[in-house]
Amino acid sequence: MLTIVYLVAIAAEAMAGALAAGRRSMDFFGVTVIAFVTALGGGTLRDVILGHFPVGWTQHPAHVYLVISAGLLTTLVARYLHHLKRIFLVLDAMGLVAFSLIGSDVALQMSYAPPVVIMAGMITGIFGGVLRDVLCNQVPVVFRQELYAVVSLAVCLLFLLLREYGVADDLNTAISFSAGLTLRLCAVWRGWRLPTFSYRQRWD
Image (cartoon, rainbow, N blue to C red; front, side, top):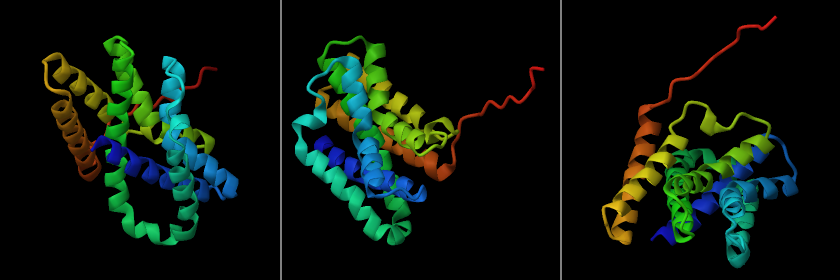
């Protein structure tokens, strides 16, 4: 199930990246790059940091074709996508949770300590969006109040906790995925946000 969710998620993230590129009036090459970075950037960064080689997408060329196709398709249907906003929110939430679980699992298979497992999951979950926003010259969404990175953190912690208590991997994945998806969707629809820190005092 997680594999199917992953494929749907990278396609959705590629489309979100393409839309961000369109809002910056980028050419088709720019659209393709932003779509690729958004969908696969988090996993790539995770693999490089952990020394997990070869990098995941290099072993699955079909994923690259899927991401590029989704990004370019977005340029043709962008005017209609505002009608699918709620579906995109659900797909994005599914992607966040699935990426977080996949990243955690990769680190666990490499026998890393729990703090590294959590960071690996969070990097996989959120850094595609961070890289997208940085390349599009805007403050990353995950740093602007939304419960996004917090959801990734919660999913990784729950996944490790259930594993520590001996819950079977498949059941653990199902519970962690369901809990993370519920938390993210509730945060979106109820407007749950983190407090902000604002500091404007001059030093002179």
